[in-house]
Amino acid sequence: MKYRILLLFFCFDLYVFAQRIQNANYSTLGYITSDGKVQDANYRTLGYIATDGKVQDANYRTLGYIGFDGKIQDVNYRTLGYIQDSKVQDNNYRTIGYFDNGRLQDANYKTIGYFEGIKARWAASAVFFFFF
Image 1: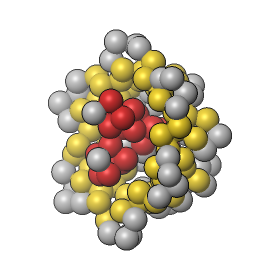
Image 2: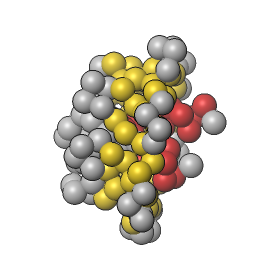
Image 3: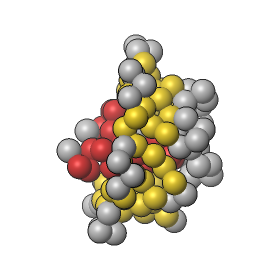
């Protein structure tokens, strides 16, 4: 569960220009297209990340939100955590991970995954919502 929460935050922060999301063994978990579509490794659509910060499943049901201020919330607007620069924090501001130069790390700097093709900072909650 700890890694799921961590990946949730990473996902919220990767957003639209991600080409591929991988685990620590470089296995492809899925993709995020330039229009915010979240796909599994077989290119099946799992959901969407809207430009307004709304995260939706494949049937367009809202799963959560990411604010431009870095606040991550569930569908009921309860705060799940925050993104501060390259640091990911839970709702008590405890650091639970980092992302930098295409690498996803837990709080102890252990690599838990990778991302490629990121050109913008902002969204990818998809890993938590759709891959775990």
